[in-house]
Image (cartoon, rainbow, N blue to C red):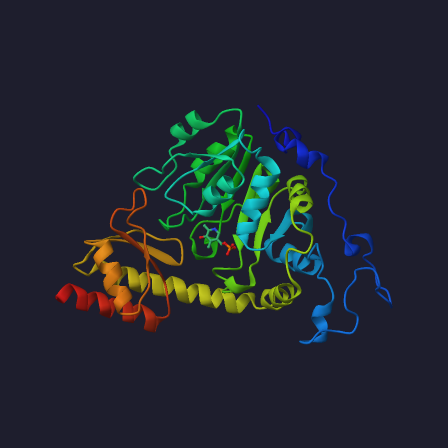
Length: 351
Ligand SMILES: *Cc1c(COP(=O)(O)O)cnc(C)c1O
């Protein structure tokens, strides 16, 4: 077996003549732009938003190319990683025929995107240690398995998936392997982005929503060899990243130092919160985390969840999720917020 991109792409996508926007057809400088039916007078807000944004987001990709040490044509930018996931499924998975593999408990959008596209989802739960069950994955794969989603660090468990296990899949499975690295900046593990050179079937997802603190801008990234990226570019809506988001992302990319400071801060808070939580009587286990949240097993997740809500503190109740009985997922907040949480839990356990 070998990787054969052409055999993986849906037939209709192979045949697709992509939409060609005004900005695709003319890219250069000009004095007068009368080609895109924009309003040349301006806008009620600020003059800058009357023109369509760059459909290929070249300025962002050039900056990212330098930061991530990978060529610009190996980068796809989506309206959040959620759009990257959707575009991948629509590019490769034939509805009612193909299937994807996910490893729950994990991020919910893989399954939702597949179901929206009428693509079968094969669930191979993680082991009790929250690692991949390689044998079960191997048994679940058939000729119509187009894609495996691996979330590392995983949401909601917080741990990283063993690199050797991921490499085992990359060396033996030649459908698309998606590694979702939404939380990689908080991890001790290194990113798989440099490995796209080695593995033609690998797609790595990252996002500006977590470490970068820019969830509202809706900007996510996919890294892969350029053949895969060009398929994704064909399928995406032409102007998927709006002008305001593009401008703010470019500014943010100049502040890498500040982002790294925030990451260090959050990781330090994570250690403190982990220690304080594990000293509470209502806490049975705090799982090790490589992310900006902790999965915490408590004595009564539903009761504690409700109690915290009454105190105005919202956490994520994951107790109905496989392998997460009586677990809450708690995002690392500011020092003040984390202390408010701890104080509320201390009051809860004293009554
Ligand atoms: C938060 C999160 C994302 C980010 O999605 P965006 O659409 O980029 O905001 C992606 N994957 C996982 C696992 C997440 O937890």
